[in-house]
Amino acid sequence: MLTSLLVVGVLIVIIPLYIWWKRMPYAHIPGVTQLGPFLPIKLPLVNKYMGGGAESPALEQLFRSGFVKDGVLRITACGVSRLFISDPDLIKDIALTRAKLFPKPPVYDILNIWGENIVSTNDSAWKKHRVVADPAFAENHMNYLVKESAKCINLSINRMEKSRSAFGLVINATEEMQDVTLDIIGKVAFGYDLGVFAPKDPVQPHKMTFENALKLTMTLGILVGGVLPKWARRFFPQTDIALNETELYMRELIKYRMDNLYDTGKHDLLSLLVSSNAEQIKETSLTDQELVSDVFIFLVAGHETSATTLSWMLYELMLNKHVQDKMYEEVKTVLSGLKFDELTVDTYEKLTYTKCAVTETLRKHPPVSGVPKMTRTDTTIGKYLVPKNTEIYLDVAQVQKNEKYWPDAKTFKPERFDPESSEYHKVKSCSFLPFSLGQRKCIGSKFSEIETAILIAYIVLNYEINNPKGDVYMNSKEVLQGDIRTESRITQSPLGLRVELKKRQA
Ligand code: HEM
Image (cartoon, rainbow, N blue to C red; front, side):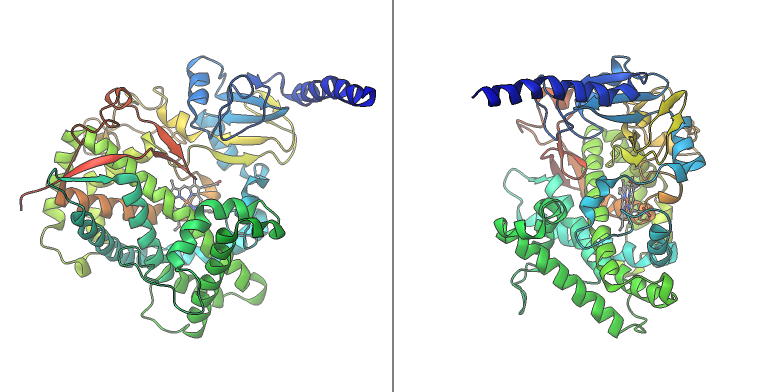
């Protein structure tokens, strides 16, 4: 008994001392300290300031309350300090000028379910992945994406129409957009119909369809496969099956591509990736395992981010009728009468206003609200000394909401990106970074911009997007204030966003 009391007593003294000691090297950096660790949930008293991602309301509050000095905010949680950088000049310094000193932090290891990959590696290991992947994302391959995106949204529209009731057509936009972008990534990344809009049964020897395996892998699977040791997977039997099945499907698809290397009719990302890999010399080519891991990253990175952008765009269009009307005039002129197979990247280029609206959505609601980096050595950020191995977040959300760089930042205004408009605003360098910046910039930025513009263009061509009447959630005070609750998946999406789609008269 006495020993237990002694141990507890010592711990009560030692733990706070340790936390205080860990905070010392950061005490000179402006910021706040909380008792508890960085958790995805907010606990009163324990983690007052940091209870979620970089776009948590607590973080926003800190920005408004003047805790941020010189574009730097420190949050120390349970002795661990993270810095949030919201000054464009400092962002430029970290992401461009001295990028080598700020590599990716170990937080990305969670995505190493099938080994190291394009997103989790640094330096020469990363370069090898990027050299192989770059050609697959070249703009001249994007015609396939344009056509497939148009076909997928058409399938989605057909399915949505089946749920039309006497009261009209009201959809859960967040879920619908998740499905469309999954269908597209299946077809465009793998050349594989996941059956999102025409469900199918698993074919022997598979125990699960690729669609179901992927959906589980991309949610619980990332935690079970990326955090827990392999033996612990048995406690999550369904997730374990999903992880094994996802790998099996990806291996089959890669093998098929390798056996048909010279089939010029294939335009999907995987075919392009496998061909590009085959052209490398042995030392710079990727192993089968590395290819599997990269393909999985394209799925994770490319699916939810685009779905989130689309959901936010539907939300903004629903609240901004004038933007919707202007967009409708444009899409009617560009798309009417065109068959899906006639669509190309040039068609996309003609959607100038729609493209500005996509960019404005990415400004106001960046799906990746903070880009993590770390310090490789003791260094300075602005005027502050920062120790080696400190986690740094480029605070995309705060820079892009800052009135100093974005006048009237709260207003959804696509015109600010249109050089022809009187409201055009010359963007301060490094104050717009939804895809990050520099050599680690998103490889799929063009892919997602094209996909989002085509999908939204067809929705607007077919429907007026309205706020569903009488819907308790959408008529809530929060929404009327132009605010909405968000849910944290990999990105921050509008929580269960429902919109009414009213068919336009032909
Ligand atoms: C709106 C959609 C998207 C957004 C907002 C987005 C955002 C980002 C950001 C911020 C990064 C940098 C992450 C970091 O450095 O920590 C990134 C990297 C990456 N993204 Fe995206 N992304 C989107 C769509 C896509 C798509 C469609 C794909 C592929 C099909 C993709 C594949 C990747 C890959 C592979 C990387 C790692 C690149 C590298 O480190 O070389 N992303 N993305």
